[in-house]
Length: 455
Ligand code: PHE
Image (cartoon, rainbow, N blue to C red; front, side, top):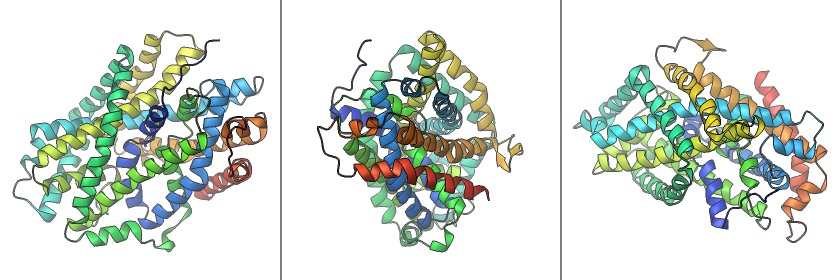
């Protein structure tokens, strides 16, 4: 069998993995989750989830991928051919498709906001307004947009077609190269915005909300949300990192790669916190009246309106956010495309169509759940929220438990050690700790969190 293609450089592979991790999860979902789960208390639990569970689970996925040299289903078949373990891989693919369905809607919002920033439409009615009035302008704008039918469906469909084009024309590599330059730019831009937001009058209260925890607010629900957010943001439990790490060269140090990826991902999330929460209090919002999902799209334009040349900043930001969303939607689609291509022996073209075309309907339904379909609820959640909660808070942790149990107990016992120490050529002092977490602590802790949320 031909050797799988390898990432050429260490920077390239870290960049690709960071590129997958950093996306709407950090910029759109993280602040919304902090907001609806009580601020700093959530942040604290989130950081603990990343450190204690996220990094070890990431290492387990890396070991499976690089050791098994296959896709999310293939690695389980490779190590345990006659068992039903491949089902864990299948579950991860299902979760990734559900996530793709609603992620596409938010990606469509970034497209809409980019267009409106360039044309200036977003800021035309904001002239002369400040404080609460400014807030109302952007709030109403977002509410109108997502509650409408044509606009929100058009952008969702637009985003799906752009994805299909990129997947079919094979210009994916070009986009990824470009994103290696654009993502650092996004990062610099976020630092600028954070400085601006933190120096707004009244920002201190927002910083306090974000940083000083009220422990009484930590409930099982908060812990489940923090865990789900950690897995979502690190792209865990979706088969993505298994697939990527199969392309890592043998001498890549998995330990330091995992730490770098987790640290950068966390940093971007923290920067967003330092932008959104100071802005919320500075503009006199209670925050409570904002729907979590729309938080970023209301608050950021306010920050831009307070900087000189808002259209310029806004266009730049939403362009970069659009690219970040696109690289993520493409990498999530790739999980399903590769699966259909390999397992059902379809051409790449057919696989792309099979994956993307149903989204035209599914994602549009999700988009409408903010408007006409708002009343259609499952377990008291809109269709959008239901998909998000089920996939993020339940399926990702569940797949992660299965991956840990598989690596810890069923795969060859040398797999993890060999992969983490590059066959004994590098030292890994924390190996016993990682092994302990993967075998006992992670499955147990994740299971407890999952169960407690339902009690
Ligand atoms: N981790 C990405 C984010 O935070 C989402 C993602 C999930 C991307 C799975 C690729 C694969 O937005």
